[in-house]
Length: 236
Image (tube, rainbow, N blue to C red):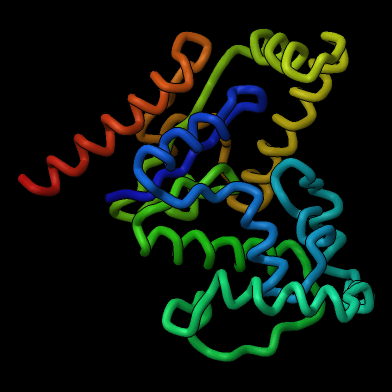
């Protein structure tokens, strides 16, 4: 078994590749669910947590957040919100499988450090269960030394990704180009801000796949083959 992290350039259909890998292995697929998990654990609104996520990341906002008391957002929760959150919390984390072993009172102030710490705890929890595909968010760094983690980078030339996004979203090329450039920058800044790493540094990955030349299924096949190789070595 293994935990797979997938880093991807925007437009590379990384989510589709991840979903196929997860489906064929019967693994959990963790993408934007991480925002919901952190929201529950930190008792902080999803829209606040999401501001620190990779596709909305702003270095300036992340730095400023350390000096702004966000407790005002606590008032946004209504009774119906709490009625929704409690059963969901029970569903995600039961008593014998807690992310946090002790009962802890969390500060109502949510900043970039809290986001990083909680996302890392979720990643390690999932990696220890050994059956998850994690999309982005620094998983390739957080789990770099985890013995069963495999780190994948999906790549395609910028011009091709612009073409794909323009086609999929029915956007003018200029608008698609700006979107790809912006999301790439935010993902790059996210990894640099939290971990001081270059997202395109090949040393972070076991495998870099050019998805311009391979289909979703072929890309998934390569990842599954790597898992099989790892399994066979462990048995030898």
